[in-house]
Length: 298
Image (cartoon, rainbow, N blue to C red; front, side, top):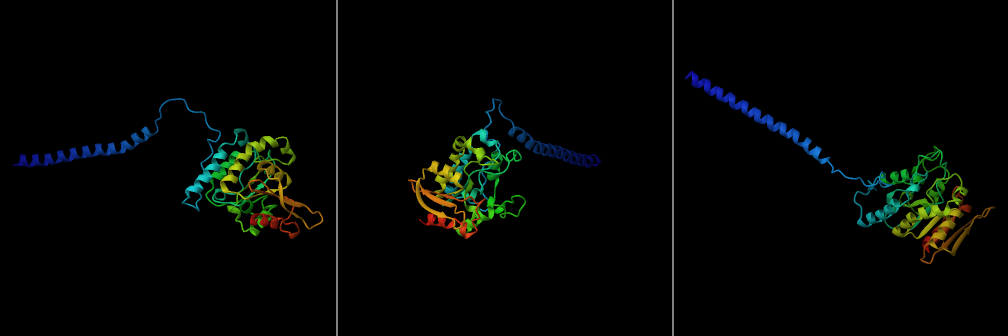
């Protein structure tokens, strides 16, 4: 009887040991399997890698956080403009400059007005790191509404208060346009300290940059292109074929600077206004906003 009792206890101990060993093996297998799968997931077949695209390091366009559900039509619009950005020549991407002055939401839907300066100001040597490539990456990474005129601090001043910023905001306000939802850019994306420095490269730079503007104008159904200064207006009129003088405004001050609106055969209008870096549009005597308003209502 003692032997049977000891044998029963021994059998119980043996079974417990076997169960512990089996359980340990199952546990080890469960722990090791994810590592094996992870290792397999990172394996790639050997072969020649394709040549990297000049845009390979640019992030894809992200949907704005304020619009979590993007309309299919809006998404198609953004893709069209984004494709135009992708076709910018590699030689342009590493030059100092910037592309858009408003965020992705300004480039969706129907937008009646497109604001265009001549080119980014500043010093291309001191701002060598502020490249067109970087500007595109920043634009694509935006997840909020944004306007360089309303939200950026220029020269250390509070946002929207330096130089031409408050003057552009004045016009937008008078036209009941949200600066963060109004497309804005420059005819040429390359930065220069003076306008004269662009002349030698005018044709080349226009050919490089214009396809992006054409995509914006066509995709958004832009009715009026507002150009800052005579040179920007002249270059844009040449591109869209706007030669018919439609309307004008002359300042009612001693200098009497003139702003003009020209219409193209397709009905699109180019409004060449005084440059807000020189003319204070907040002064009624120098404000071309009523001219722009008449064009939009016409």
